[in-house]
Image (tube, rainbow, N blue to C red; front, side):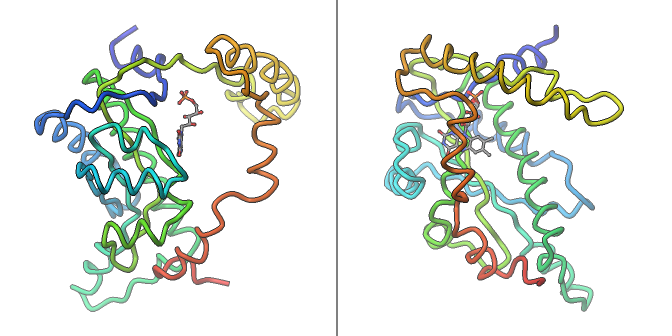
Length: 246
Ligand SMILES: Cc1cc2nc3c(=O)[nH]c(=O)nc-3n(C[C@H](O)[C@H](O)[C@H](O)COP(=O)(O)O)c2cc1C
């Protein structure tokens, strides 16, 4: 196994960080790893807002629903779906951008943002740092937009906390591979048995790390996925100019 695969196979989200700073050199390498990411149409509709200021990180921790690791770790990067840049490009040639008004445009931006997030996380881990992605910032997107002074046609889709690990997390088991890898066609018959297995495995994992409140996978998803998740996404994305199509 090579070093890249070893890092990917040992992925884990860390949530216990020291407050030790991250050097400018390390941070630049992490950001450049994301900057080199591929993008749909080479449109490069992603920007990063790098927050090191402690008061701002404390505010983001609050906006994300009370996630103390955001305030503890020295760096928080918000990954922005950014159709502002492409809009300026179109204006340069006298054209008007409409792609951002479609669900397809928002999907393209979200995919690009996800690739950038993956690069940020892998680069940070390759440098011995810990990471955790933060989708919780979509709980209060307007406040994030105000805090980061984001213009129209931009949206804070996800973030990542980066820091020096205090207590390392334990890698979390996944749904069985048979429910993930489908050869030649989707194998729907593989899903129920895989979930039944995982609903037993995940509580054992929670138990092994001393979490008495850990639920099976199905039960854990029941509340957020039956009630809808971050309800502000649609109206705030629309206010930023996205997803206008009926
Ligand atoms: C897009 C995305 C958003 C996430 N949002 C949060 C979050 O807001 N807070 C958090 O603590 N973890 C968050 N996570 C981490 C997931 O909970 C974690 O990846 C999952 O439980 C699997 O655990 P592992 O990463 O340790 O393997 C997020 C992960 C992703 C990919």
